[in-house]
Length: 344
Ligand SMILES: Nc1ncnc2c1ncn2[C@@H]1O[C@H](COP(=O)(O)OP(=O)(O)O)[C@@H](O)[C@H]1O
Ligand SMILES: [Mg+2]
Image (tube, rainbow, N blue to C red; front, side, top):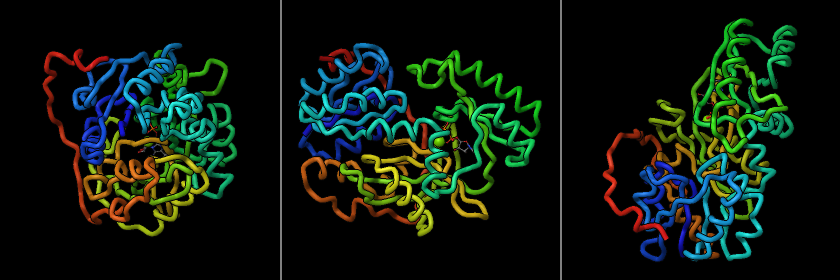
């Protein structure tokens, strides 16, 4: 049973987790829009395909699924998954199980203003949020919102273009700067939409930040929630984290998973202050804090392989060592000539 990790980037650890979970019963195939990525070097087969958004992207990905008899398909990039989600039927008709949520679910996760509205509608606490500068200024004037505020792209990722403002001048300057930066970024037209408000302004939630892995099965039913206290963030990703046992956060994660009905893993950011947990955002994919759960004993790839084969997941794959602390580290990988040999 072969697994495809699309937009693998630097997630070589995920390639290794899947290889181990497959235990020789299948290969890990990866795709990326460029070869210079460590995930490409780690895989059994690495194939360069066009970026999502390019007219040929879906055809190339379907070709890879056909050629390598892919059973499980994952996308590891927020700005790619919607293109696959729009074509789920075509992948399913090849016998592929795309571990990718419906477009409606992805749209709630990709758009932080939609996440805010979804949270409000389901009674899940979210930060007070305004869409665009005008709405923010009106809310600040009426004291619905107060300084300092967090200003960020509505459809951002990896902590890009996040600013904090303590007064109106800073808020206006931040909005101008973020808008200008977004216009220049390559994002498959998902980050900046010319005729829309592309920036949200939020209350700053001051507290301790947690990362949740909210796991649903392939029917979208809640399976488990793994909780990590973030000890450090770097380049928009969790850099160090401790595994914690928190009934409140498990409940909070299960409420999100149950209401959202996503497929597979949901990477959730939460801040806990004196009023309890507050939902910042979610990414419907293996995210940057999954390895902390895996290193602490979880094995979500094994659970997903079992589900794809119609088997039950074993309880131990959802168990983690509470109190364990893990750090990301730098390492170097030499690219041996001949990556091209891995191409079809
Ligand atoms: N409203 C907020 N209050 C406090 N911190 C925030 C807020 N919004 C964002 N942050 C900080 O910025 C980081 C990135 O923001 P996030 O909403 O997760 O966007 P991204 O999609 O870029 O990861 C968060 O992990 C958190 O540390
Ligand atoms: Mg985040």
